[in-house]
Length: 272
Image (cartoon, rainbow, N blue to C red; front, side, top):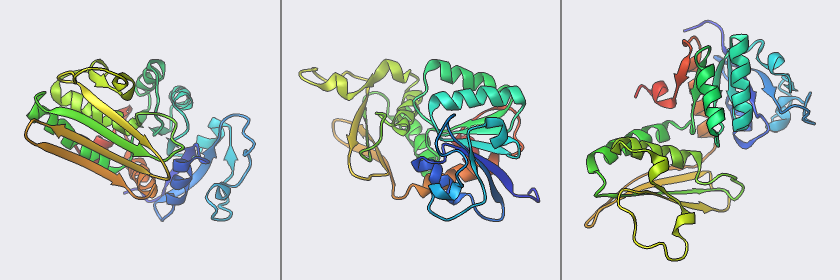
């Protein structure tokens, strides 16, 4: 194991997950070196402790990418999809450091930018840093493969009232796992709430359905239901504290140090 701590910078430190990662970035083997904000943010120059309520950390927030990563082994980016794609391209140009992407909502151009950048630097892209959810995706893929399309698949997710995207990135990740198990494309077989209003008719065989709930302060609940005529199998994960995602991001950061260029995921981290 390397003698010195792993040095991390965090893009999006003022957000829910970003501030949780700041709190988790402590211990003998982790050193927080920078917080990266959007260009022109009013919070530039603030101590990162202001985002966690933990007092002065001695580390200032910046909107300069080069300054943020100059002493970092890994940039953990939990800002936005567009910003993460831009950061990936710029880090690839400068030759590092490694990048962990935890944003969601990527369009095709963003995805392409990240794939291309991964040929120059190591990039880990995760829709969810939970080790439990990582295992759940593997279970869902295997169950989908074994059960076949005779079993209907419905994915139910619930998050806090402030969540902007739907279905969640994790729900889509579970849907993609189910689709892989069947050897199909999720986008060609996804059934969302918009298609279920009014009189949509009977359920289409082989579709992967999504249902979305929003309310209160729910951190994240995900259920995958495999329903046959006579029985139903449910695989589920419930998050009680956002700290679990931050801890998973730190585990991923430790794993990423020293990796060769390439595109990785949380399954690589847990050895699946």
